[in-house]
Amino acid sequence: MAHQLFTFMLPEDEETFVRVLARSVFEVYPRRVPPDWQTFRLTLDAMPQLPERDVYLVASDLGPAHVDAIKRGPDKGFWRIDEVRSPVLFWERSARNEDGEVLSGQLWAELDITEQTGRKQAAPAAFRARVLELSNWLTKTFRKGDPKGSWIGPAAARAVKDEGLVLREDFVRNGRIVVPQGMTRPKAPIGRKFRR
Image (cartoon, rainbow, N blue to C red; front, side):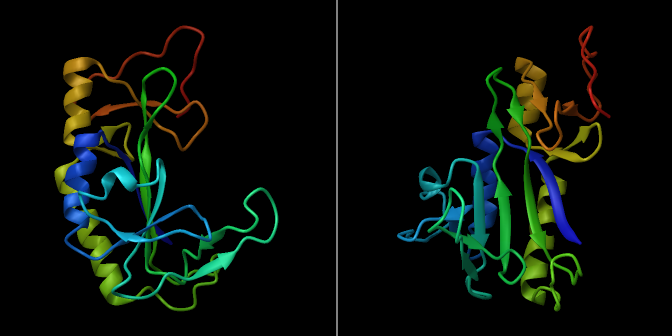
């Protein structure tokens, strides 16, 4: 089973998150890797170079990034990271929609043996420890979301409270509005139902 956390981060939250990530070695790759991609280590200085939404972070000190060529479709000629064989953390960054709402992102890593993915061995112990340490830091630093299932960065939580920023789930169609736990959730507008 994959280890997955849904998150809401503003740029200030991302900077704090990258500071924690930069304590370890993570090389940056986009979702679809162009043949001429020059990988780089994740640091605060490298943040402007990050892919806009989908980022693969490969723990290159623990193992190489395994890639497969894409042989057909619109991404033909690009490479894709093998998420099962590589010690990789997938980071989908939060983004804004056309209404100015912040859409959820996620952190995802495959750590266990699963028939669905074809993983025959669990992830290396050092990679598992790194992912779980990062997960523990995040769940202690970020606020729980209401409804359950999301984690909200401190800057995003302040913006919800002080500026009325709207956070919306992006992993389901017509995602629900999320607020920091303990805040009053807005009522659904007339004629629109939020999925539960």
